[in-house]
Amino acid sequence: MTEEQKQELLDAIRKQNIQIGKTDPLFAVITALEFVTQRYLKEVDILMLKQSANYETTTVRYLDKAKELA
Image 1 (cartoon, helix red, strand yellow):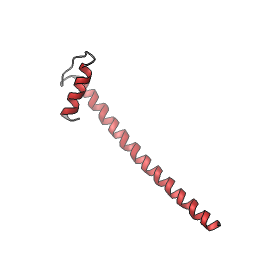
Image 2 (tube, rainbow, N blue to C red):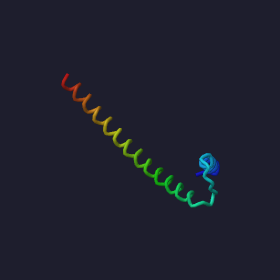
Image 3 (cartoon, one colour):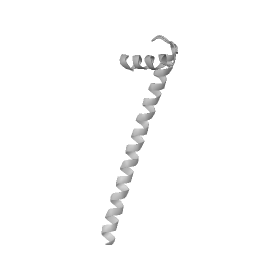
Image 4 (cartoon, one colour):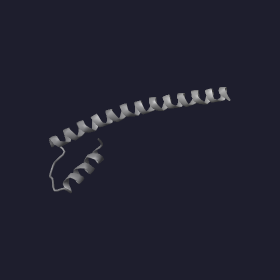
């Protein structure tokens, strides 16, 4: 998380009348959640790419088979 992002987060939290600082344990939790979320999204991206490749392969097979039968 960049310093600018941290400041934006602090500002958003402060708008709710919750006072925290950069050394607050809340930032440790937010950073951990961000790390877990980014890791999860990378895994989802990999799975989506694999699934996309499988769909493409299947489509090509069906098209080849259709041409063969025609």
